[in-house]
Image (cartoon, rainbow, N blue to C red; front, top):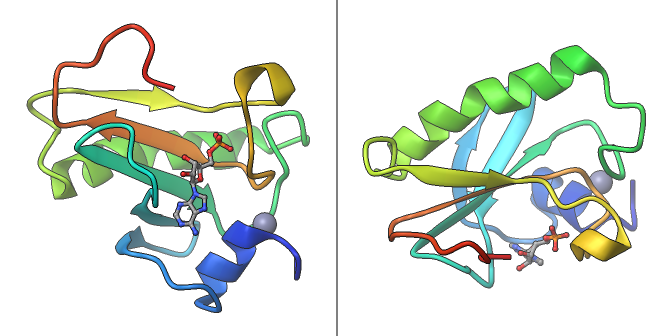
Length: 112
Ligand code: AMP
Ligand code: ZN
């Protein structure tokens, strides 16, 4: 989608710090990190949120990438938190489905 921030990041029209990429997804560091490691994983196909009839196999593929991306960021052994904000009450600000991967320190109960 032309007016979607994360679609533009995936296409390289807006710069990002790339962590990982394959046919299904693109991962990059969050511009305003809430933890020493804060990486976002986005599907290359645009879905606004978890409410957007996302195919189950795509959700599985995104989650299956998390351990590999955590390993690239050096937090697979120390641990990490995975967050998918959905809608207003969760504070979702970018309406292109994304998975937050947070770690690099001991996380409290309220990270996002
Ligand atoms: P959410 O609040 O779950 O919608 O998360 C959106 C995330 O996108 C926030 O953590 C922002 O810091 C992050 N973000 C916004 N713009 C950019 C950008 N240009 N590059 C990287 N991360 C961004
Ligand atoms: Zn998009």
